[in-house]
Amino acid sequence: MLEYRRYYEGLPKQGDIVVKFYHSGDQIRGYVRKVADTANEDTIFPGEEMEPDAAFAIAKSHGRGDDIWVELTEDVTWDEGWGRLVY
Image (tube, rainbow, N blue to C red; front, side):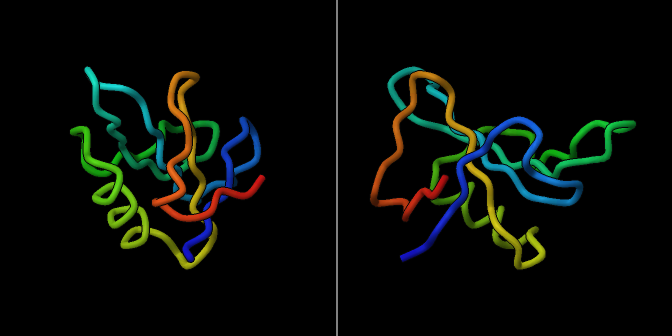
């Protein structure tokens, strides 16, 4: 089972990958970003919203083999079908 880390402000370090999920209408969508240093804005891959499986695929392809962080907006709950979310 795939394992992801729960995003908390300040925990991911420069170069880490974050998947953010939010509601778009009645569907859950996400985007992927690479954490930048504090002087720059994070890099977003790609700019449009994606289904969760596509967002995880992009995150894995741009990661360095490190943890993938997951940020959930307040109205999104974790789906166990995506894998395991650890804190």
